[in-house]
Image (cartoon, rainbow, N blue to C red; front, side, top):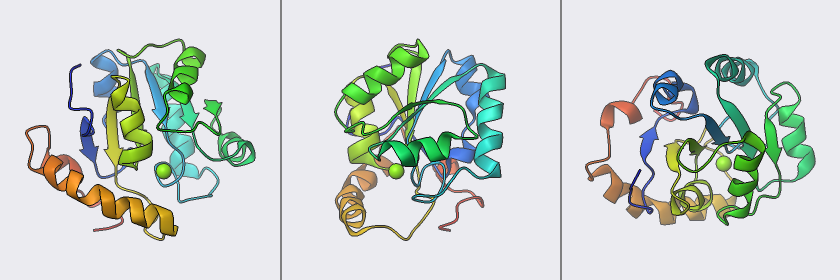
Length: 180
Ligand SMILES: [Mg+2]
């Protein structure tokens, strides 16, 4: 799908609100997930919600890979009850981690999507490779200073995106969003 590489393909309030069944029907077969603030708060282990989500994704038929810039023990700790493929120290937004993930999942750039909470790391990496990207709002509002700085830089891009045709307000706003 042709898209503006500076924008996410979709913006949804939470990973847990994404209509994965629809995405499977649309032909997607692999999902690359960021971990911190996308699936759980920064540094947290998998919770019930996350475990349930990955069981559901497996049932639908998706291959899943966690792609994190964090170190191996953090990603393995999260993955203990998730059983997805993993890529640690991925150096997002560079393409290597995404390529490795697609190799592990046996998918390609036309049927793989990226879910993450940061435009410059998770989503730019994916969209410059031509993958569909879904941006979610971060789970934990308490963030490290360098992430706060990146959010400040993200703001004007998000502002432009919210005024563009690709944006859907209903998707972003929901009672599930811990920030609202
Ligand atoms: Mg993140």
